[in-house]
Image (cartoon, rainbow, N blue to C red; front, side, top):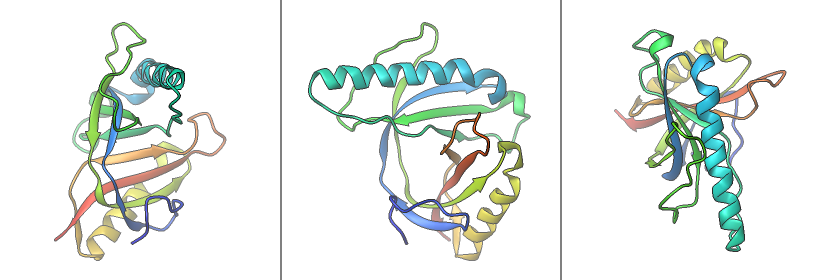
Length: 172
């Protein structure tokens, strides 16, 4: 197994990740239609937190955006539950709210042993990478033990999107 700091690879890999405290927002619906405002609220709150911490002499770098999709394989896209997150320091117990009507919450995202793969290309073309990852998990004696997660290495507006697709796993 490799450590979390290893670079994402186009080949599936198994690694260990620590639990992480996350600032999160929830969306319901097609991410292309409902995500922009919520993600803006999430970043607004986390950047305000970084400025507040900096005033106290604490440096904190905003992480890459992640999203969990617990029901994407069960319901039509316009009904998807999206849980969008940015990691925050462990000692944080409250987060500033920047956007009225969009609540930013704090959650602990547990990981442990995970399997992941790097997908290069549009989000709409992730399915073959997801299927490769599922097959890899099964062939290595594991089963999926949590929800589908994506970590966005590039902006949706990038010429080529790069996305880590990840699942918590456990031995069968």
